[in-house]
Length: 114
Length: 122
Image (cartoon, rainbow over all chains, first blue to last red; front, side):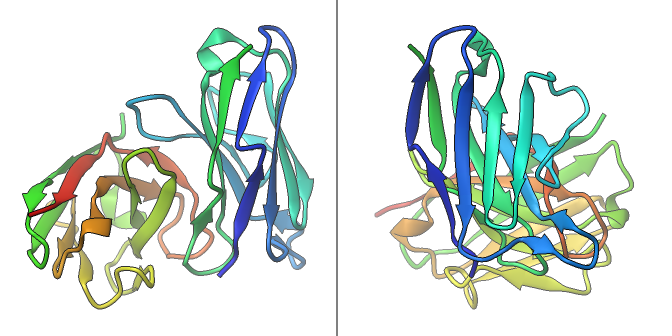
C-alpha cells in the first residue's frame, strides 16, 4: 500500500500570512502515460465531513477560494494557503488515488491561528 | 444538489453486526462509484470500502476484509455496508463518499455525507 506522510502534524500561522502543508507518498503517484498526479487535498472543519479542495495535485475544486493552491509531482506535494483567513482553521488531509484501492490518506495537519 | 444521508449507526457489542445505509440524491447514482471512509474518535481518515457504479466490483481495506460487505441498490439510490464480527477498533464515524467516476479506479471524493457513528462496546 502507498503510505502518505504529512508534515507538520500541526501548524500555527498568523492571519494574512502564508500556510504551507507538505505531503509525501511512499511511491510515485504520477502516472507517466497521462502525466497526472493522483493526489487530492481535503479540508475538515470540526464536526463536519471532509471537503474536497484540490484534485490532480493542483486543480482547485469549483467554489474553493483561489488562496488555496496545490503543487508538486511524483512523491512530494504541497498545499499552500496564500493569506490565512479565520475560516481556514481546520485539519487538512492529502489522499492518493493511484490506480485501484486501497486509497490512503495522510495523517492530517491541524492548522490554527497564531 | 448532491445529498448523501447515512443511517444505521449505533451502539453494538463486540462480535455483533450492523448495517449502514447511505441514501443518495441529486445525481445519477448508478453512474458513480461510491466509498465508505471512517474516522475513529480524534483520529484521521481511513478508506474502508468502494463499489463500482454497477455494483459489479467491490474493494475492501485489509482491516475489514472478510467482515464487511458493500452493496448498492441502484433502483433505490442507496448504498449499504453490512458489518459483522465488529471489534472495538471499528468504532468510528462512517462517511459515505461519492467518487468522480463509475469504476473503482482513480477515485477521489467530491461529495461526502455527514456521517453516522458506530460504537462497538460492551
